Image (cartoon, rainbow, N blue to C red; front, side, top):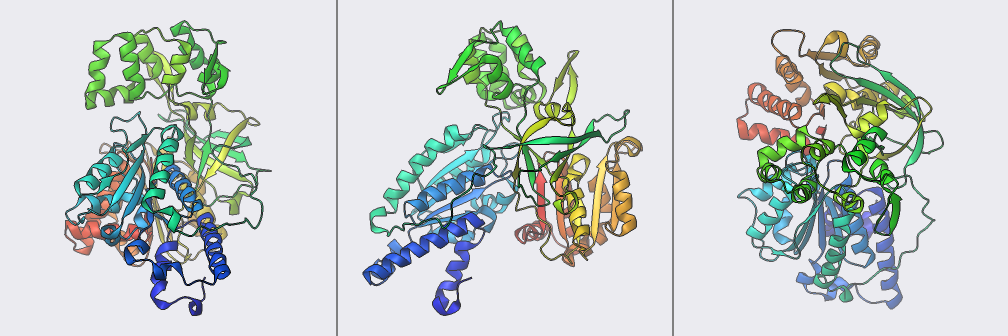
Length: 594
């Protein structure tokens, strides 16, 4: 903290706004930057530069707002801020839910990096910002220059939908677009890097870098090589255990993975990133149906590998994308496929129900090896909510995995990563890394109550929460809502929850087994049954957490909470929405949905 004696009182709020929401690395960089500025000013014994520059120039800064669900947009935004800051540009990085929207009318240079969730929706941390920008409350912005970078998944019909809406809305409000909105698929760098190059160049021109003092910052210590998405740790699988019964309609597994020697740390709420490998049978089937040579060398961007290696380790084979479908329809000369792609509903159905091999069989086309590899989307890691606390399991990390496997026209189909993980044997190795999720954290005040809503594998982070709260002897109460199809076959971690109830580590447990009675019962129904207690807990300071399916469950739970606010709090619809928004802004309503 800065000593108040060195800082004018009028600047306290500016400093608070500047550091609000910044991660430790960014704060460290700022510290070095300001030290460099101070050193330069001491050397020339000159008055502060800001005193001689008109107010309009002082106000000029680059503001970077990011919205991120899984951390990708955050990483890109941090990289952009680091590059801008290294050039001496006055740069502010802020998460969307930490951005004071009243400041928008005064912004002169704004970059937005926004991921997409579900069908073109904003990530949870950006709901309020996007709602404000879309509303009549948004100000006219004739003074603003801006650029938008969207991150999305082309296996969804509305690819980068929210970023494109933001881009159009800013233009509608009178702002000047500096470059076309970027739309990055899961191979993010392909679009993000050239977009950043142009954005940094434009920022230099807009902020007149030559008039801005630059700081030469010398690192205090060497930066060690860090395990990350691009440098994963090869971990050993310790346990792979089914935790649903044989008669269950689901195959859910509990995995325990050793992190011994990695020096990796994580917190409850974080995710484990896993780099999967495609099943050899699927790779062989794709190569066979196209009549290609598995050993043919394919060179992409200067990297040469055999075709089977590209398909097995570097390309998506179980997820279809619109760009590939368009290329395939043209190569196959199929009017039927082209027609399906052109309509949103039929495209959505095709993406949801078919895999690459199904399209190759139904619409034959003569792909060449190199063209095929270029058309397919690069394989990306999958993120799994961590189901353990290091306070309980030490140098291990646990996962709760649903193995996705089904029959399609009498042939087996599966999800790439879940198939890879579920077929690993104890002792096998897998490449992993930790993906931090600072928006999904236990309350800092351990006396606060927590309400956890996690049906199916969504219960994973709450196993970690309860372990952590038990290890730290937290005095706050823990209330878990869990649901699945059947009590007898699908009660995940049943003995653990029963023991936690007995030991006082879990104070309430509400269960919704949807198929154990004629009328289906879900977790949102259980919330409404306990509406009065839910509202009382929240009003007394409880934190609410939701984990699981974004398309249905999370929306239904959200509606249930709005209904509770109206019935128990006496709010109208707008007031109920504001109540939930306020909880989210306070970090007391957090969702980890997918």
